[in-house]
Image 1 (cartoon, rainbow over the protein chains, first blue to last red):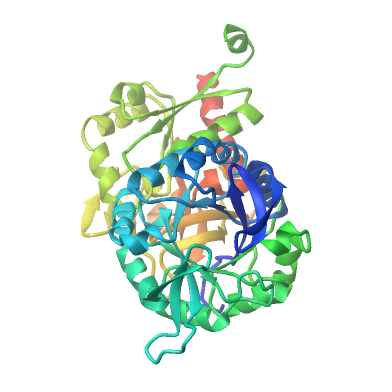
Image 2: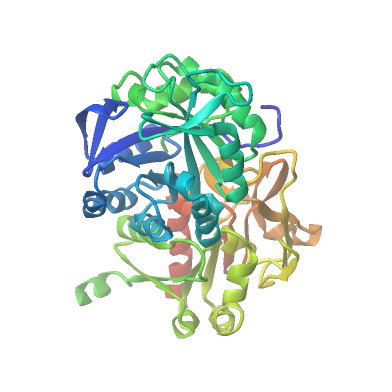
Length: 263
Length: 226
C-alpha cells in the first residue's frame, strides 16, 4: 500500500444470471429471481461499483445464446468494465460475448480440459480480456505437496489439480487477471480464505480478485490486506445488507484508496 | 431524418478499426453520449481509407501490443489518416491508439509511431504490478476544454503495461494530464486537433463519458466555425 500508485482497490458486485435473469442461491441451489441483469448492473454502477462480473449459469448452450441480449442491454447503459463468464469453450464463444458487450471473459472449467484456450484468447483479444476464474478448495485428505485443488461445477467436481500451479500456468498462458473463489468459504459469509489468497498473490503479478465468503466490510478489508487488487461480493450487496457506497466509505476510512463514486 | 438535420448538424464520428480489440463498447459509449448531449450521433467503425480520409472527427482505439495495430495502419489507412488531419480533422487516440500517436514504441523491439505527438512509449517500472489495471486518478491537469466539467483528480479506467514515459521538456506543453503508477506518466496528451488518453474513457463511468462528450463538442464546434 506504500507503492507509488494512484490505483484504487476495486469493489466488484457479482451477478449470477440464468436464462436472462439475475438469480440468487447458495452454490447454485434454491435459486430465486432477483431481477433484470441490466437494471441490477446499472444500480450497482450508480452506487459506485468499479466493475461488474456476470456469471451466466444458464444450463444449456441453446438457452445461453438465446438470452445473451441482456449483455447488450447492459453495455448500452453501464459504462464501467463488464466481465462475463459461463460456457466459453472456444474462441468463437468469447468473441460472441465480447461483441455482445463484455469487456472481459471469465473462464473456469474449459481451460482445465484444454489449457491452450487461454493462449488462443490472449493472442486473439489480448490478456486484458482474459480472466481465469479458479474455484479452489482444500483437499479432503491433506497432502504434503499441495494445499488446494481446483474444483469445478459449483464445487461439486474436484479436479485433482493443484490450484496454485494451475493459476501460475494460466498466467503464463496469457490470463490477465485471476478471479479466485474459495469453495470452502463461498456462501458462508465468514470471510475470504486469506491463506489461499495470500499464497496466490505472492505467486502471480497479475491482479487477483478475491471471491467467496464476504459477509461484512471487514472481510473485504482483510482480503485487500492479503494482497487482492479487487474484491468480489454477491450476497452482501444483493440482500441489501450494504450498498457498494457504504462498503467503499468503510474501506476508504480504513485507508484503502477508493474511487469516489457518483458524479 | 432531414428534420433532424435542420435542427442539429448531425454529429459524425469515424472509429478507425486497426484490427485489434472489440470496438463495439466504444461505439456504444459514443452513441450514448451523442444521444444524451448532442441530439444524436452517427458512428461508423471502419477500415476503409476513403471513409477515414473524408472524416472530420476520428477516434483511434486499440488494446494489446503496439506493433499489430501499427502495422495494420501502415500504408493506405495511415495515408488516409494523415490526409484527414491535413484537412483539419480531429483525432482522439485511446489506450494503444493513444500510444500510436507518439514517435516510437519500445515493446518487443522498437517500432515507429505516427509521430504526431513527441515522446516514446516505454514499459512501466517493475516495482509496481504490471499491467496497470484499474481505476487511477489524474493529476497535473492542464486547463484544456477536454476536461470541461470534470473535477480535477477524477478517476479513469486504465489497462496497459506501456506508457509515454520519456517526454522531453520541450514536449511539456503536449502533456495535458498525468497519472502515477510506479512513476508519473502522460495520461492525456494533445496538440491542436490531435488528442489522446491512455485510459479508456468509454469504460470510465460519468467522467469518461464527459470527456468523450467534450471531444465531440470540440471537434464539431470547430467544424461549424469553419
